[in-house]
Image 1 (cartoon, helix red, strand yellow):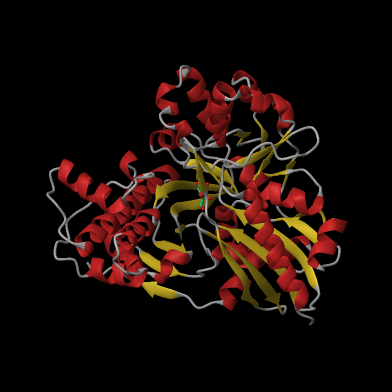
Image 2 (image 1 turned 120 degrees about the vertical axis):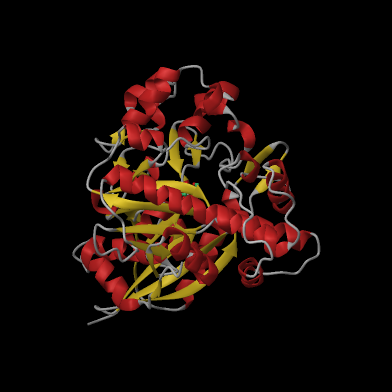
Length: 474
Ligand code: LFR
């Protein structure tokens, strides 16, 4: 069989990359073509994504591919959730998209005047309350910068925005749109009543497009600029987490997935939304998945804390990388320090190491003494969340979970994997590291008819990678 080549772009909170996926009929191998930093910009009091730079880097990646002179079958793009750009009547981008860590939504849920409406939002959307959800970002736009919404004719989430400037087609892809907290989880379409009740302009929302469809073809301008031909751009699970779940070789209903990146996303796949008192109490989310599945999961503040610890030590002149931090945490003098990663302190502190120390002191644990102690407090906090979250999940779905499939960049951290097995008491199976790339690629292959369905895609992924196992030794 001929090899099929697809391009998968995955934009993360700190970097983006373009991978070339090669499918030979049995296995998928992936090759990194281009990696670039994603450096958000503080401008005045606001925090933005540098969309123009990111689009520029996307084109740089495409130019590199075109030099390879291979026949590319399609392109798929996934990014982080919730953020969006607004276009005016001439399809011009009105403002740079805000970063979800921008502070304008701080306290918005607490201050929300209409409690009944909050209840309704959860009942209809089934989405975990987080202040950065699109619904609250738009509500801030409406309250603080109404002129912006007056000019807006189109709302596109980050992947939709890239897709639009590549193809001139406007859609809101289903999985990314679900992160907005404005989709009706049952209907898999816009919750128009909610949108009206919030006084948001319903006209800006686009047609929902399911993963696995062709969005359009590279425009003439992009073809000329990059040297590529009229390649189709495909709607993948364009929320990175949706692609990562699709790319996880889950085999049965007693397995959970745990995606370890900047965020930790822990959950199961469900045939339909589960929205009840339990999911509300535990604040679980029902995000849209590939093949119509629901991603019933909890969004946990994850390796962000470790990433920020590294940054804070590096800024203080301590040249230390992730492997050393992990190593020092595993050998910490004091193994018992622990933080609550969900505490507001850890969302966007100026200095994460100081934030961890402050938390430990304020909660009466004393002062962590060194890098090992501080890092250990963070690891303990993150893994404790995994444990609680699994308990809640078992409560919600009414069955035991015996295996956790850990995927994403974080699984290169063996201490994290082992600690997860130890603290949760579950079997941990790791791989792939590049789950979102694999998930992105198989949905393209499904759309093009090379792979039948998600199940077959996951078999191929399992066939293509090495998995590791960790067992609890406590
Ligand atoms: C992970 C992720 C999470 C989302 C967060 C913010 O990269 O997409 O799923 O909650 O980023 O968008």
